[in-house]
Image (cartoon, rainbow over all chains, first blue to last red; front, side):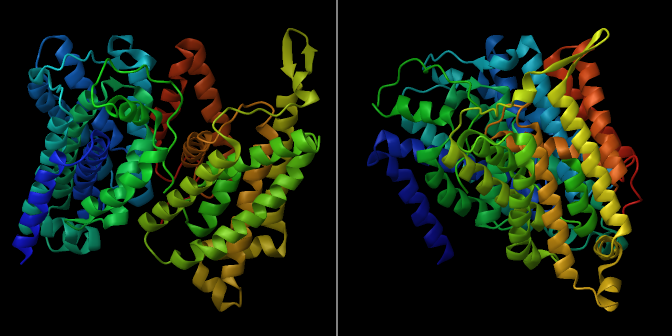
Length: 303
Length: 268
């Protein structure tokens, strides 16, 4: 029954782009993309209960790495992995400091926010990575450069990302790893008393989560064709990720997806200007060069 | 502003992420009062404080009270929600354009030997000191203030000796919010603001509180000075846009080495 339901849902999602308008496809891309990010956050924030409010840092690192590597002639398909690996390294640094020094709850939130903010400030001050203006990617439409003429390619990629994230979480959930994480969330002291290496598992959760989020960063960069320090490293993006997971149900397999399906369409009509630009670009089906993006700070959809 | 946050956090161990947004509301209130009724922000800060007191009590009674027993994470998320609602209603009501309150004081400067002193800043600084002093007098030398500190130290004990802890919490939250409202009105002629300013204000005040020490009024005050000095020095010696880097690096260091802050008691 469960399998049949899942397969039907998958079949519907696979077939949808053939009947949807370009505008609706764009909305679905955003739904899948945010569901993926929320799912990645879910590993460390939901299952392990270690509230990170700095996941935007991983998005930014992933996106910037892939975009910069493309300038050196390295395809984003490879850059994506490099970016994700770098995000994982950053995740392990934050995780090491946070968990080794035993920061919990509010203190961990602040630490992750502080790291994301440091990344944001550095990115906007280092001219080699575009400074405050950020990076713009020239649209070539070349699939080897992670760019597609056809909206539907992005649709399937985003769907694949979401399924990948969910698959990873499902795998974790069934193993000892997932059970340890849930136990750590419920009672860390008891876990330690029983001999669970809590530090190791929290680190692992953080690294896996950061890696996946870094992958998402590459998608973000090559979907919007622009990276601005204030949007990709900003607190609002981290919050977007968290509220999706929390509203759908943090620490559950389908929660982040549900949350994204509820919140993303709600946010579209009043979404950040860079998304609006993207939607405006895709509305007439044919895409031209990306419109210049205003430098206003993003306004967030009402939650 | 950090003083208000210290009070809320110190007393109730509630992390008020809506702090900056409450401050922005204080600013907009001062803005409306000065453009519509022509009241100078240095007078209307009293009104703003009163309005924010009411808002604070309402948020406390209506929302925070229900989840005081829940873990910290839940409170963070709740306050984040309140912050989003406040920010976006401000956005709806006032639009995204930066606003600034005009005050005749803001255009005055004093010549003190080789220095130019901005009168508006001086008045704001002076009033901040007065408010901090008044608050510590209230906390340490009045019955109500003692009750607040008692409830902070040991809510159960306070309840045993007959304190209405919920009411004390509501007062504390209200006073905390009132401080923010006053602070918002007072800085509105100096600092241009727009709805998203709230978030960065929240983060800055968390910086200050953590660096100064949770639940310590003196710490909040000194933390505020320390953060602004670190940022100004950073702006002078490196690039102005890098100044925030210093306060965040300071924050990371303090979090790791002395989470209770410079003047705080050890966290329980």
